[in-house]
Length: 182
Image 1 (cartoon, helix red, strand yellow):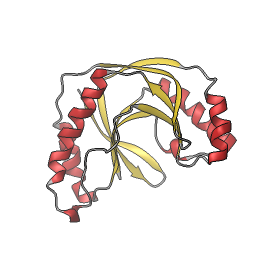
Image 2: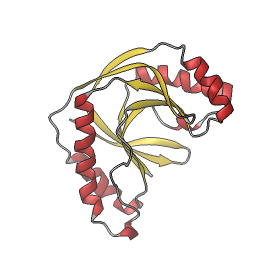
Image 3: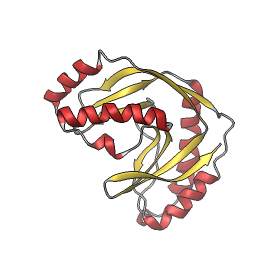
Image 4: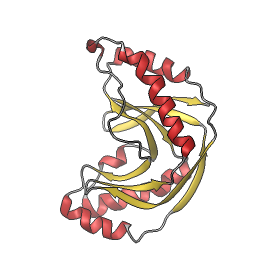
């Protein structure tokens, strides 16, 4: 499995890790700990290892005039009772980048035979940039308690990004395997 993202700088990742560890310690949530703090551009997809070289080449060939992009993180929100996240303030440059990345990656992989392990396709959901704190492994009863905590937390951070990262799932952890400085 792979995904494409804007990885947060180490200082912000360290702050986000504290929130993820709080969720682990209080509610046993560990899935979000498998990744560094990031904003997903293309959600996880399957691709056979043999196609990895094409994936990296496609990343390296990506061109945009949108960088650097200023990212503003502001407090917390959630998707139903399954995901708690840090809100990314609406950003037209980030939305344009998402569209450019999606268009750039869909075409080369759309024509691959099904046997090559999958196709990168547009996400059916609207783009809603965020930095995940807990996802999918939070129990509905625990969500209420966790949200009670995070709804009172305040967070204001900002950073500039100028790189897109390709992450690959290795046993138990997502690792950056390629990066494109733009």
